[in-house]
Amino acid sequence: MNRKSEQTLALAGAKDEIQFDHNHDGIDRRGFLKCMAWAGAGAYCVLQGGVLHSYALGGLGGHKPAGELSFVQISDSHMGFNKPANPDVTATLQAAIDKVNALPQAPEFLLHTGDISHLSKPGEFDTVEQMLKGLKAGDHFFVPGEHDVLNDDGQSFRERFAKGTQGAGWYSFDKGGAHFIGLVNVMNLKAGGLGSLGAEQLEWLEKDVKHRSKSTPIVVFTHIPLWSVYPEWGWGTEDSAQALGYLKKFGAVTVLNGHIHQTMQKVEGNVMFHTAMSTAFPQPKPGSAPSPGPMKVADDQLRSLLGITDVNFVQGNHALAVTDQTLG
Amino acid sequence: MKYKLCVFAIAIFLGLAASGFGQNNATSAQDAKTAPVEVKIDNFSFSPATITVPAGTTVRWTNRDDIPHTVVNDKEIFKSKPLDTDDQFSYTFTKAGTYDYFCSIHPKMTGKVVVQ
Image (cartoon, rainbow over all chains, first blue to last red; front, side, top):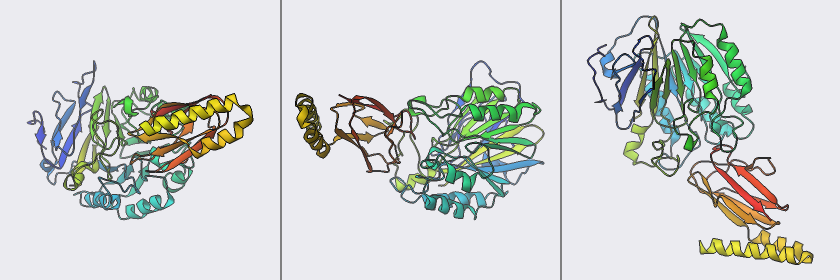
C-alpha cells in the first residue's frame, strides 16, 4: 500500500479510501480535523501528519493484510420511499448488495445503521429482510433509524432486527479483537431537541466498557451522528458528550452512523466519526438547502450519490480503513 | 395567501361571535369545523408556525414534504400517525390554552396553537 506519497486531494471516481491511524502521535488535540468527502464529486481528503492517510482503493490491488477483519456498512435504505429522485429504492438497495457481493474479500458481517424502512411498515421490513438474505456477509447487525420506530416504539423493529438486545435495542459484541457497540439515539425525541441516547442506555454503556482494556479498539455504530454535524437540522445527539466521555480512555474509537445521507468525516482526539451514504436518496450539504429533504438529482447522477461503506480493521496497529463506494 | 387570511379572519369572527353570543356556541363551532384552519408542513417546518384560533376550531395539517412527519402535542393531548406525503391530520380545539406541538421524527420542527 503506497499511502505516503499522497499529499492532498485526489479525484478517484467511485472508490476512495481514508485510513485513520489511531496510534500515531501527531493528532491535533487542540481542535479537530475535519474532512468532508462528497462521494458524488469523487473527492477524498488527506491529512498528513499521521492522523489520516488516504489512497485510491485501486492501490490496494489484491493485497490483504494479515489478521484483517473486514465488515461493510449499509445505511438508510428507506424501503417504501418512492419519490424523486429515486422511485425505485429496491433497485438501488440491490445494487448495494451486488457491490458488497463483488468485493474482492467477502466482509465478515454487515452493520446497517438504520432507516431500513421509510414508514416502519411490515412490508417494507419484509422486503429488506428478504433482500439481505442474498448478501454475502456473515452476520447482520442493525440499529434503528427514526423511520423504523414510527408506530410502536420500535417493537416490530426489534422483533425482526434486534432480538435479545437491551432496552430500545442497544447491544455490544466482540469481533476480531475489536469491541462493537450498537447504540439507539432515535427514541423519545423531545420538542426542539436532537437525537437522544437517554439515561438508561448511557448507564448501560458505562458498565459495558468499564472493565475493558484501553487498548481494545472500539467501534460504535448508531443512526444519528454522535457529533454536531448541523444541529439546525437536528443532525446531532444531545447527550453524546457523556457517551464519548466513557470512551475517552480507549486509544482507538470509531463511530459509524447514517441519517444524513452523505459521507462526512471528522477526527477529534482518539475518535474518528464517519457517516455513510444512503442506498435510497441523497440529502443536501448542511445548510445548503431550505431543508434536509431529499435532494433531487438527474437520473444519471443518482447512483453516484448513493453507496456502501467498507471497513477494514488491521489487527496489531489498530487502524481502521474506511472506504466509501458509490453505486454508480 | 389571501385565502388563508380570509379563513383566518372568518375563524376569528366566528370566535368573537361565539364569545359574544354564548347561546350560539354550538352553531359557531359547527361552522368552524366546516372551515378548518390550515397548517402546511413544507420544507421541514410548520407554516404558519403559530396560529391563534377561537375555541371550537378545527386545525388541519397537511404534509407537503417527501418525508413523513408527525404532529404531536408535548403533553400528547393530540398525536397524529406518521403523515406521508399529502396525508392530513385534523384536531378540534375545544378548550382555550396554548398547545405546543412538534414532529416526533424531526423534533427541530415545532409549532404552536393558541386557542382563545
